Amino acid sequence: MFQGTGSGVGKSVIAAGFCRLLKNRGYQVRPYKSQNMALNSGVTPDGLEIGRAQIVQALACGVEPDARMNPILLKPQGPGVSQLIRMGKVVQTCSAREYYTLAEENFEVAKEAMRSLREECDWLMIEGAGSPAEINLQKTDIVNMRLAEAAEARVMLIGDIDRGGVFAWLKGTYDLIQPQHRPLLKGMLINKFRGDVNLLQPGIDMFAEHVPVPVLGVIPWLELDLEDEDSQNLKSKRIPDPEITVAVVRLPYLSNFTDFDPLKQVEGLSLIFTKNPDELEQADLIILPGSKNTLHDMQFLDQSGISETLQRLRGTKWIMGICGGYQMLGQQIDDPHGMESGGSEKDLGCFP
Image (cartoon, rainbow, N blue to C red; front, side, top):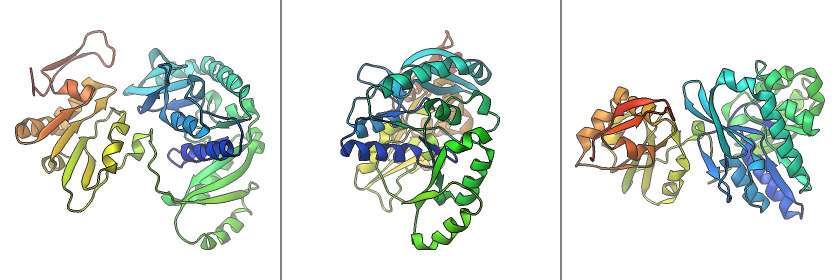
């Protein structure tokens, strides 16, 4: 099982790498993440919704994505509110407080999915979420150390040295893990290292005096064109003297941002994710992306000045909308049944 000192440290990619490594050695491998929170999800061949990381990991295993690989998915839908998807199907929309009352029920669903997957493979590659050191969440944890205990898993803790302070992150995480769970931790990995690893070795040697869990490896920084599921990792592709500049409005509830990954492969194209109206004016094409809360994001456009900028640029720039972004280009959005946040909002009025 791969856990991390925080989000974005590389758990998903490392798990996918081990999936492919073991698959290439002739083993039957399956990926598994009990609970995921992401707006950038994907759909299995049988029409069920799971986190995109598990889809990539399934491909690394050479198998079709399966809802059991990510039985609990949370999609943020508003301040403190998320859509709960269980075994690939929407169950309800709930607040954070309501969700934690469902923790044990969700844990049972997750464990049953895990047991089912284990019956058909040699290796189950389990990924944790965020950090196991969130001490306020440990009692209701269904994705990190309580899951590792239920699975009798050997845990590898991953730290991101590119962010700085990796030894403090690893030591702090170890110290805050509950004592009964520390024996599950079998090793640590330092990820995203740039430079001469020999210069890091003295630090690894000294670290062994503070934590009784060995650092088993250092993984170099790799430029990988893999789909991401976390918007905090969303990166623009800025190039000097581009032939064309595409600006994507970075909405608060932007969803399915991997729609734009192919544009990053186009030579001479600069792709910018932005909330800055001035950058929109410099673009050749402006895209309003999909949204998990279209009404809220329409309010954001109004409050940020982007609505005014887009209306002024009509007829002088190409403006395109995808999914919820397309709805924003109309006259008005109505949500009478509260499917997202409820109510109505005036749109940009770009077409009838």
